Image (cartoon, rainbow over the protein chains, first blue to last red):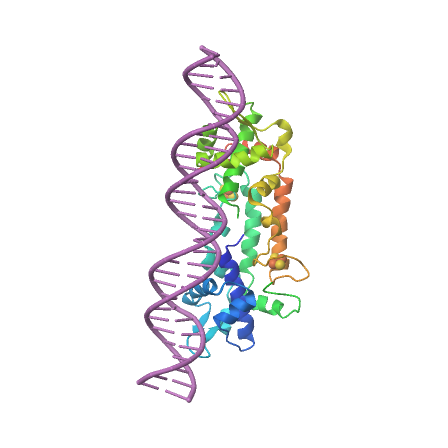
Length: 143
Length: 143
DNA sequence: TTAATAAAGGATAAAAAGGTCTTTAAATCG
DNA sequence: CGATTTAAAGACCTTTTTATCCTTTATTAA
Ligand code: FES
Ligand code: FES
């Protein structure tokens, strides 16, 4: 569904957000440990998210990553777009170059329902709302 | 969503089915032309589907591919499983090794709805039913 | 029975995704 | 200032996916 980059990216963002919510800044080492992801690779992914200002990075001693309160309203759809592009929202189920209702593939009308539901879900889910869910004991970001 | 293999495979199957329905057998060359896919690569994919008996292949002059009437009831979910495995039905949105409701990721309950809808759609859509839709003028398998 | 035809199969190559390593830049603190 | 800490950046490597090519095998029809 999502690329590895996107999976790691989402998990990293959610972990940073959870910690920022508690007032803590987290280092790259901590992040990759806590979400169980390859550190250098995850660092690359976070670079994209700092360039787009979703995540704030601070260098030097006691540095690390945070997500500012105003960015907590960012929707997951934005993060997915940054990391995976928009093919998940726009692509044809059968790989036709253009997905459109005027010359649809035979799965088009069944498929766009599902695709649109996914898009809707991501567009209505903010970082903040997920962080709230994360406070529940059983909800996890690694394993 | 699906791999290229799966996209080409589904398009090839649907084209073969459409032609078989009219009593025609189709060659690899025709298939790749009519669904606009790389021929040798598509041939590999069809090998998997002939080994699993979804598609019937006949060598030699006037040979080619067909789908027997009794295979027209095959569900698209089967083809997807053969070509892409079952990660699309079972995988975690955030890439956790195990997706399960007892220790869910924070997107679990929102995600499984979408994932299950996709699975349901594929499991209830037979080759035959798609071939019927294909008779409509505007529905296409290439471009 | 032989030439032609068409799929099967194996070897190889190119491109993309996934991942590592090393150097550079910025920030902090003694 | 200089040593230390931490992220940024770029070069590089590995694996997987996508794709091609060539030889073999099966089938058919003349
Ligand atoms: S054209 Fe295939 S999903 Fe829209
Ligand atoms: S655990 Fe992540 S989707 Fe189920």
